[in-house]
Length: 189
Image (cartoon, rainbow, N blue to C red):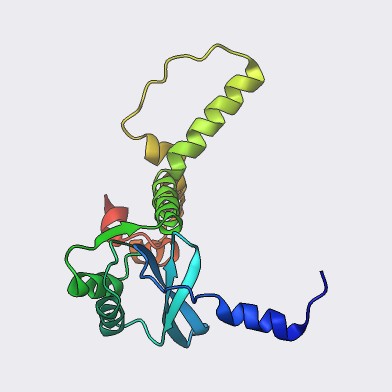
């Protein structure tokens, strides 16, 4: 269909402008102007998946001012940063706070890693038992949990045997404490 550029421009100008409506569901997070140096706040319409605004800082007053200037927000998805929480709370007590998926998964992953780190000795012992059972094709026997299993199977056991050997070699308690990082009280016990 042949047409002129003037006709296209005229048709574009005749179209009504989209009314900017304040979204009901917002996402608020920080972003870097320059990583490690200067950060701002990004505000996203989560229903349309569009960036609405970029604030120059991460301060409570900025978030609060933006929300007061744009009433109608019902839900804000954010991380645990206290300035964002305080800004939303100060702007309106009726706005619901929710955690976003990324931060939930990140926090869950961190908690799982801490739990695994705390139980590394028990996990290694269980892996060794399972490997031994698989190699020998023996039916699993009921595991009798020993009271001092942690000290018998792990890092503590190695330190214990090292301290015992150094005592047998005639080293002083002070020297053993300095070389092994174990306190003198523990060595005496």
